[in-house]
Length: 104
Image 1 (cartoon, rainbow, N blue to C red):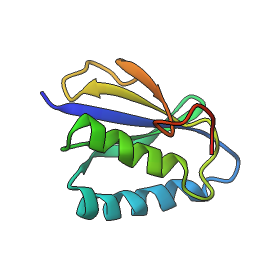
Image 2: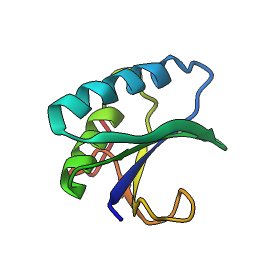
Image 3: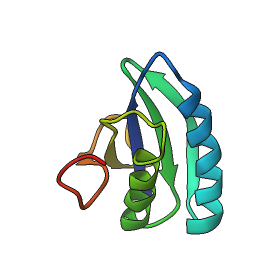
């Protein structure tokens, strides 16, 4: 069992940001030593990206960087859970970016 952070991003009509985030996560893998745990997927009104392989603090910092990236829809949040969770969306909700009381 390892810490898993789900990045939930509200869906929009323009979905170019999905591929951009996917590419950016590859950069963050190299920079921060995390890993994309599973392929992202749309679930209802959000698109979810899954990251693991680092400390919770590092994963939330990465999620914050994703949420504040140009072109990413506002309202993203993270769910802190673990790799053994029976389904996604379980765990502790964390507003993004971490450490700010308002959005970017």
